[in-house]
Image (cartoon, rainbow, N blue to C red; front, side, top):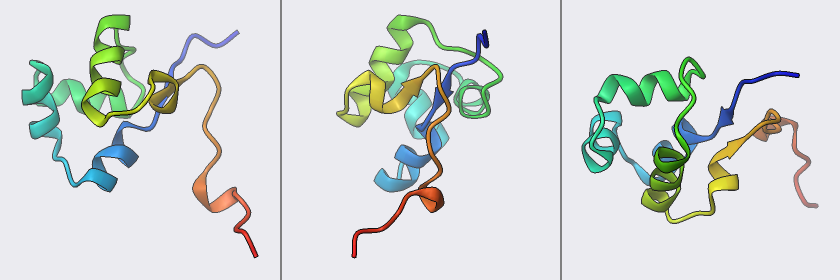
Length: 79
């Protein structure tokens, strides 16, 4: 069983035009921590995960998953 946590932080940042530094400042963490999270080099605490989801205004399961998220390019487009 894998202990890694997958996330969509980079995708959400891009969609909402938020820099790593801006997100880090809003969360009260170092901007490098955001990079570590995005690359899966660091798993957030539950408290931090909930704060990240709250920042983006989405449920935590939209941002984080124990299973890899499907790539957007792999999803079929409606006709």
